[in-house]
View 1 (cartoon, one colour):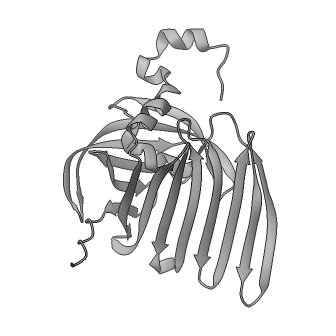
View 2 (cartoon, helix red, strand yellow; view 1 turned 90 degrees about the vertical axis):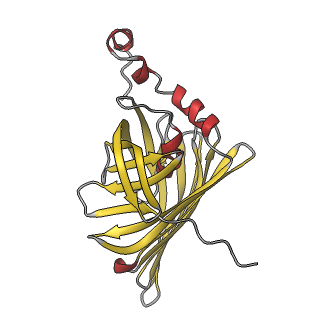
View 3 (cartoon, rainbow, N blue to C red; view 1 turned 30 degrees about the horizontal axis):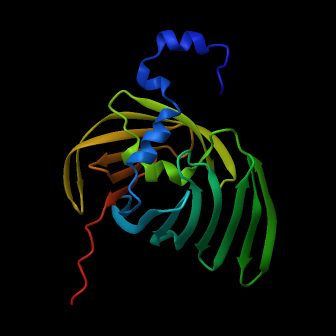
Length: 242
């Protein structure tokens, strides 16, 4: 949505925090460390069922991301590498390998000039391989879906603030307009310890929706709304013996 004709009225009725829909990207890019990783335990219906490791690093004018996620009960493992521009977080390319039971799906995409193209391949060892093209126009300002989780601790939002933008979800090959709104999150208990004062970021406008809890520059909890699924920060690994 681009409310062009209402711009003058918006300036009169919205708080300043809601106006800076683009400025937050510059601020988030300035806060984002050159490298980092979140290491979360996956809790499914009250039981440990896997993990998610999502990390990033700066490489020139790019931010390169990776994701390794496992759901043991579904025999699912996802491996992703992706890149976006540093500053405005525009998608560049993504490769996803999605393993489920004996099947493997590969998604390989490149974004340029407001359009993403690529190919989806599904390999089932007992029945062969199928491929299909990927093509989708991206609205101005689109970000990769994974960027939201990388940037969550660095958006600079205070309770009551919100930002709205479009993200591109590679697995669904679709775009959605999402709004991230900040609330006080209270205390959060994790396998890595207790975080007393967190900020809860509600991600709305897509399915499934998420609540992301951040504290001290870290994502410490992610809830999947409408499902009994939660990700909680895991303890840092013990240093290797010398």
